[in-house]
Amino acid sequence: MTRKELFENIKQKKSFLCIGLDTDITKIPPHLLHTEYPIFEFNKHIIDATHDLCVSYKPNIAFYETEGVKGWISLEKTIDYINKNYPQIFTIADAKRGDIGNTSKMYAKAFLEKMDFDSITVAPYMGEDSITPFFEYKNKWVILLALTSNKGASDFQTLSLGDNKQVFQQILETSQKWGNPENMMYVVGATKAEMLTEIRKIVPDNFLLIPGVGAQGGSLQDVVKYGMNKECGLLVNSSRGIIYASNEKDFAEKARMEAEKLQKEMEKLLTPLL
Amino acid sequence: MTRKELFENIKQKKSFLCIGLDTDITKIPPHLLHTEYPIFEFNKHIIDATHDLCVSYKPNIAFYETEGVKGWISLEKTIDYINKNYPQIFTIADAKRGDIGNTSKMYAKAFLEKMDFDSITVAPYMGEDSITPFFEYKNKWVILLALTSNKGASDFQTLSLGDNKQVFQQILETSQKWGNPENMMYVVGATKAEMLTEIRKIVPDNFLLIPGVGAQGGSLQDVVKYGMNKECGLLVNSSRGIIYASNEKDFAEKARMEAEKLQKEMEKLLTPLL
Image 1: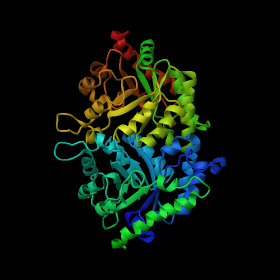
Image 2: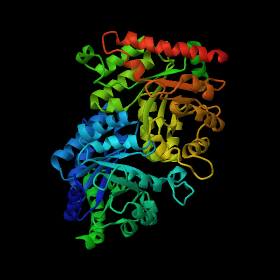
Image 3: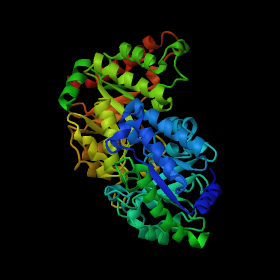
Image 4: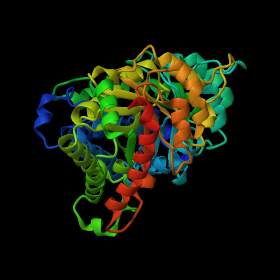
């Protein structure tokens, strides 16, 4: 998917919502546990109930790997289901991979070619040759970790490099040489919305994937205030707040209600761009 | 496996060799491609031919994920085969994972509990809560990326923090509060053997996993000179140089010959500890 297409979808749906499919088998409604692939079954219902309210789905790969082969099949079935039924959805493999070039190539093939995700989240620590293999697929995207929303983000990401620059800022700067706003986004945690002003000085045009709204405490208004650009430039993720809104037979309906609340709020905030 | 047990294995086998099972389906002997799980079949032969010469096997997970469900089954069959037949082998899931705490827990369960690897490589960028969930398993290990052997290592890992300290050194220092030499090792690339002197000042007792000997150009003598401690403290990995020594029916035999060369060299270098 191109940046233009993504922005068109955002305008059409009046939403920049990404729904995180962090599907934990211990948290899904019990009546689904009797199906062959409960995680896929759950996702399918969530997707059918919410696809018109969001522009993106983001399965976190850990939740699938932890179920072994069955989890992997559920992941493949999920991405196939989205690609077949809702091809205008921007799909994110939240994998946080990154290895030497030779090996990153293998991960790129797994997620961007074989499973045909639109994008993958990538960890920056191993540098250029760990990231560039993911750029080899046309109209596919790298979403590079910059500033995450967890407590541990302050351990290394915000260390000062002595010239008034923090590690994550250097990562933003350096990575601008490797990718561009047509193939690279950044993960920036919403818990630090005011830092988006500084971040936008370095990466004015790139889309930002913002986790941490809702359960992790970030504010949507602040994210938009400090982070939105003229092509929106934001994908805001919510996972648990939407997909676990109910643990009963009405789970998909309740998920839709939660997604709709966010979409309505986003519609207001998008007005200047519509 | 405990540190004591690992050191006993090293002394008994006179080897601190780790063999990287980076099994690429495009590089294995053609006659194996007709089996149901060629990657597992290849690994099985390599393992049977080399298990007495090495103390550790390290499958890089990317090579399995890139083959989808079949690759994942091959990975499970490989770790089961090692655990069942050679339980004294220290197994490493070279996964380079790391996510928010909630999610790292899922990866820990996948690799350290369900598949029962002894250890997993973890990326440090997301900090403490992304790493500590892996410590929850007794006698299992975190192997934290510190200084990798690829070109991109110089992009962020060696950035100066302005107080004469580089980013990877801060990672070594800070992580010492989270784990200890009984549950934490570090990845340190062999291409920078002289830096091991500085590294040993910060982490004198931890085991170091050293990739980059052989194909990537590092010297075993230098690694030992600068990095060995009184309990060896080193696992030196070789992947391609061993497992792809031949592409013919004699591949396992040739792999053994290459592994033996390294083991013999290691035996000499281990003399002071035996």
